[in-house]
Image 1 (tube, rainbow, N blue to C red):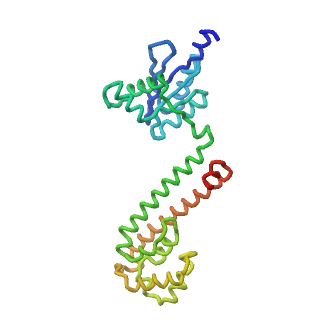
Image 2: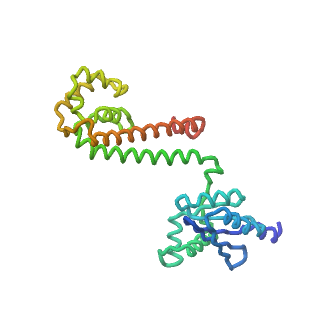
Length: 284
């Protein structure tokens, strides 16, 4: 292999500092000290202009950037589709390198592109696997959405525990066992106030609530305990048709909806992963 061939195989280095609306690009050619700067707006015409500009050099292209929220995803996908070698730089490593090179923690886009380029030149990069190109985008979105739904459900449950139950049915908290269960929300939605229960006789309450609490062990004993607790509750005696109870039921319905969404996401994830060898190892 001749020196000319070796030189021609050296890649063009493209350092990109990502932001929401515009990306600062620094291009370095092998053997040349002068850097080319570009500003790329977050739109298709500018993406195509960047791809065409870099491809004109007739060399392999290596691109690197710091992952920034989800703002890098669209540009990274287009660069990957163009056949470029796309890399990540660590946010922590970038910050430490910036401090070492500039003796400052100050962050601005042109300076960050220079730091990223320096990290590329010394080989301080990480692999980047584009979720869409690698076929993992659906699983990633399932995972992220599951996290959002679970967090929302937990926040809502804390509101029930700290606001609604202390007002209307303080003693009901001890009957709750699992945050994954729907039956407790369903029960409170039907009986948001212990005074609704106390107004019924025990047999009528047990018959009415039997299906609501689902497949519980010792259902009759549990319902008897709830009934006796409701008879002596210190909960506020609000009218069952009041706006306050309507708001409580609205929150409970939202909680049940979040539980249903979480379960649906989990079922879909299992369906997608059931034949995956790594998933099978996790189940073992």
